[in-house]
Amino acid sequence: MVPVCPCLLKGFGDHTSAPHLWGPKNLPQDHFHLRAPEPKSGALLRLGASALIVLAVCAWLPAWQYKIFNNGFFMDDAMIARNPNVVGDFSWSQLLRSDYWGLDMFAGTWTHKSFRPFTVLTFRWNFLLHGFESSGFHIANLILHGICSILLAVFAAHCGFSGWWSAWLGGLFLAHPVHTESVLYIVGRADLISLSFILLSCLVHLRASPPRNFGAFLAAVVSCVLLIAAGLCKETGFCFFGLLVGWDILWLTWQPSNMRLWMRMLLLLLLGTLCCGLRFWYTGTTIERMDPFSNPVAAEKDQLVRILSYALVHGIYGKLLVWPNFLCYDYSFDAVPLVRSLSDCRLLLPIGCYLGFFALITLSSGLAQRRRELPIVGMAILILSFLPMSNILFPVGTMIGERLLYIPSAGLLITVLGLAPPRASSWPM
Image (cartoon, rainbow, N blue to C red):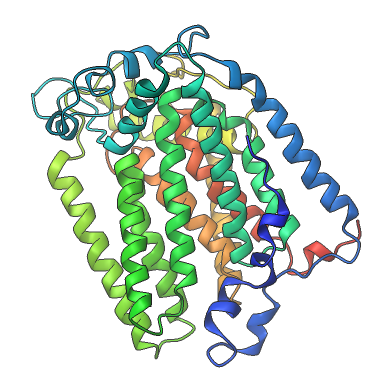
C-alpha cells in the first residue's frame, strides 16, 4: 500500500481550482481567499497526517497475505470462482450478456442487472496471472484503495486544500473502518475502480476549466469517457455526469456570460443523458425476481412499513459513515427488523441523520454563494453515489451493504474538511 505523500501534492496545493482555473480577469478578487494558507506552525498537523497514514497502512498490511479461499470471505467463491467470465472460456458476447455474478441478464432467471464488465475483466486478469492460490486478488484491492486515497488527496489539493490538509483527507479515507468490506470483500473492487475513474474525470474537468479553446471540449469528451468507464465498473459511475454538469452550472452563476462554458455544460448534459439512457435501455433497472431475503423491505406489501424501514436503513448508513463501531458483512433476512410503527424508537436514528444532512446542505450552499465550492462538491458526490443505493428511485438487491458506502464516504469527508474556516490550516498547532 502506498501512503499519501504530501510531496506528491506539491504544486497542486499552490492554487485553488477556481482562482487558478478562472483567472483574475474572470472572477472577483475576493474569490482568492478560498485556499487555506499554509500553516505558520504546522508541525503537529504534519505529524498527525503522517501518523494517520502510517497507522492506516499498518492496519491494512495483514490483508497482503490473504488468499481468496483460505480466509473464508463471504461469497467470493460464488462471485469469482464460479463466474464463467472469470474461469471459463472467454467470450465477449457472453461478458456483455452477463451480470456481475456471471448470470445471463436476458434469460428471464434471477439477475441483479448489475452490468460491470470492466470489473469482471480485472478478476479474469487476476485469475490468468496467478490463479486462486495466491494473495493477488487482495493485493490488487489494497493497491486500488491506496490509489483512490492518493487521487482524493490530489483532487482536494486542486480544489484549494494545502498539501498537508489534502494528506489528512487522503489519510482519513485510507483509514475509514467502513471500507473494510469494500477492500477485503473482493467483489467490492467495483467501487474502488469506479471511484478512481470518477476522480480522474473530475481532475481532467478541472484542468480544462474554464473552456478557452477546442482542447477544453476535447477534455470534456475525455471526462465523459472516464465516467463511462466508471459506469462499466459500477453503474453508480453514470450518475456522476450530474456532478460535472452541476459544477459547470455553479460556475455559470459566477460567469453567466461565458458562452464556451454554456456550450460545454450542454455538451456534458447531452452526452450524460445519452449514456444513462443507453445503460437503462440495455439492462433496465428492475431486478428480475427480487430476492425477499436479501432485501425484505422491498418484498413488504405495506407502503408505510416500507417507507419507515427504508428511513431506518438511511439512518444506519449515516451511523456507519460517522461512527462505524459495529460492522457486519450480511444484513439480510431479519438482521434489521422492519419498522412497523411510528412509535419505534429506532426512528430517532434517521431523524438525526436527516437533520445532519440538511445542516450540511445548508452550510455548503451558503459557502458556495461565497465562492467556496469544495463543500457543495462533496455533498454532490455524497448524494449522487447514495441515491442509487437508497431504494428511493428503485429497490436494490440488498438491505444494507457497507461496501456501498465507499464512494459516499469520500463525499462526506470532502464536505466536512471543506467546511473548515478558510484559515483553518493556520490555527495554532
